[in-house]
Length: 283
Image 1 (spheres, one colour):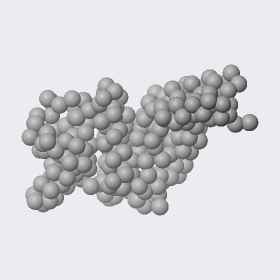
Image 2 (cartoon, rainbow, N blue to C red):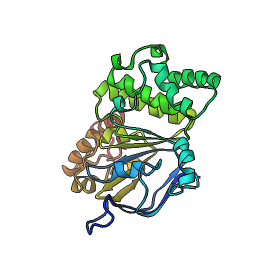
Image 3 (cartoon, rainbow, N blue to C red):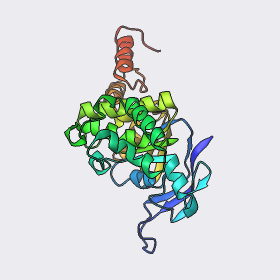
Image 4 (tube, rainbow, N blue to C red):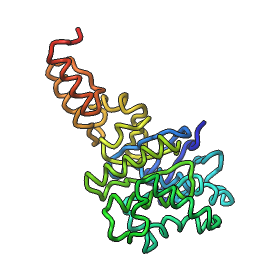
């Protein structure tokens, strides 16, 4: 069952202008419990799409349905935002309190959750993201990756069925990126939370169930990462690259080596190269 469904979604920041819209008739269904990565260069429309998923933006054409609720129905807006939580690029813009556990409690408090339940949710959410031991710390003393995990905990404490992350690692170093990605994969795997990850980092898409590639407001590829990334020429034609593993295998294939292009991880790539160079080559 799809928790998110768009039907001919069109969006323009200036509907009266004659220019092309940012989003051009998108039909996207996202299954409950899935991990979907949305990849695109700057200006591709991926972040604009993300903001439609919890009512920050409303369509100028077409429809967005969240768990069966029409995003254009003002009476459903609160329920939609309880269903889909948003995490943005800069965690400092989402952290509002001077103590980590108070920040995580902010959302449930505004939802009117009883105090005892808030305490339980805060502790569980901080444990879910691996930040429980920092519950009494000041957020400004944390690393970028830790701050982003606190921001994610604040969303988790509101018990959404889906979390949309709009380039959550854009301001982080490699260690912080790894912390955040490990966290969202664990939330998806262990708690069944639907994850929509908006990114321009190829490597962040490798572990997704599904990869949607956008360019100029349209979908140019949609499938598993193993189905999409081997389309190297399509990706590069649209100003995108592929993971370094695929790039290496593609270069070898262009030179006549019979290697697979769907060995995405370093381990898979190493195994593919080992099998090829030891002489176990496909005819």
